[in-house]
Length: 443
View (spheres, rainbow, N blue to C red):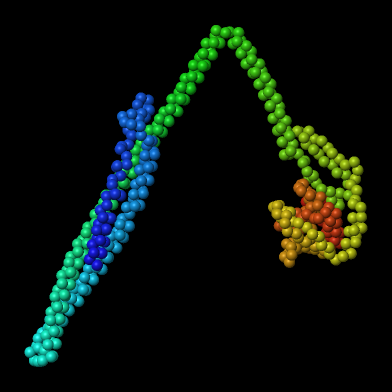
């Protein structure tokens, strides 16, 4: 056991005090390259020594090396190693103490046993006395052996104590060395960073000055070229005259092109104005009231008014009157419609409604909900859509009351005309005439 403890202590001390991984980082490099500012702000490298690699490569190499060493010399790893050694030394010390206590107890027991045997030797005779004397001699031999064992334990205790002290001292030395190495590495890294920043700033300043110098040189060169051309023209008047003639011709051509552009712009504005203000779609769709009438339209183009008129009266749709007479016999008729506008506001063309035209009233529903339901009255208005729009010939304007107006789109023009004629027929039976806004009525 003593030999094993001695070997462990020597191994730990050699591991802790090994100078290999703790050499200073300054050995890797000699020094950073030096620079100075020359004329015109150009950075010049002093050639006072042998050629060295670029500064960025040196800094990158040193940084990687320092990080590698920092990982190898982790305080945590060293602390774990030395803590293991201290724990082992503590266990050995405790074992020695326990054995010492056991030896002391054995020594006391042997003394007591010897006293008892000596007291018995004076009381007995014969064979028993010989046995007691033999026992006393054996006790003395055991006492000598125990004293030797005690001396060995004391020696082991001293060795273990020395080992623990050396381990503790080595741990403290290692921590101190690692902290110093870390501080040195941080200092060198900061120095390298500052050097790199200085070099980068110098390079940027050099680039800026080079750009400014290049621009100035370019401007001076342009000025010299202009001056040379001017001097050359002065010595060659014929070429100057030719250039003046070419310039005059170009000016005339440019003036003609400008006039053409102005005319084209005017035509384009007229076309745009016609598209914006002209009749690009029908503003009035025929309805049953227009049968047998002439239609006339006045067209205003650029302040000039033109009149367009139909060649003859509007003809009725074939079979529409008979179809309406058939529907009049029914109490009510349903039409599938889509609400395009509600009180003048456009609505999405998604949901389908049902328009119910009855003998006494009209009703617009969507599923189980009623959108509008009104009896025929003098305030109700019904006509075709006026003002244009998409599918004007299939749309109908309906105002059931003063605060509600709707624009409904039918599946076809025939259905739209059928609904208008049927509603007006039922309204006439109720002594009501359904017309559109501004239409003249007999009463």
